[in-house]
Length: 161
Image (cartoon, rainbow, N blue to C red; front, side, top):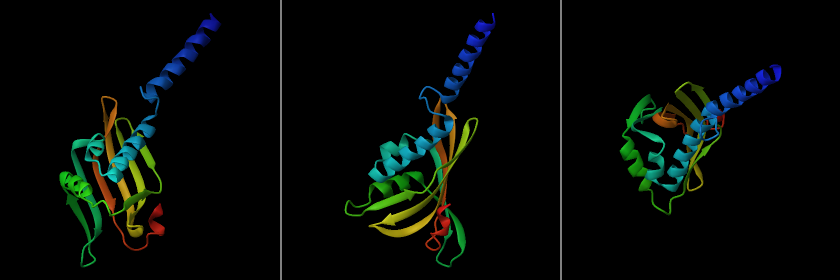
């Protein structure tokens, strides 16, 4: 009977681990991070179809930065316009958002992925900041429903974390 109990206990631990990592074999943290990686793969490929696979259809996108008068402002961008602007970048223009880190926090069906970044245009640093992605999980799939970033043209060295 003791052997049977041990076997059942080991089986339950294995089953619990499998249930937590889902059908993909990845933890929720890894799945949420992967959604952000796919977002940036589509971004750099200028492929709105790829980006749309990981965002909710009512995604909200905002930025915190300075206006012309150097006041800090919160601006909202229409996501469809964002996609159109990414897809319309000329071929001869090189752009790259270099992600320095992924900090993932998950609580049940909600996740936050914090990504410090530097943005380059034609090899020159344009600006830096932090992206904060909010995701929710439905039917086993993580979707981005809110993106907010900071944009700074100065002090990029200290903004890497």
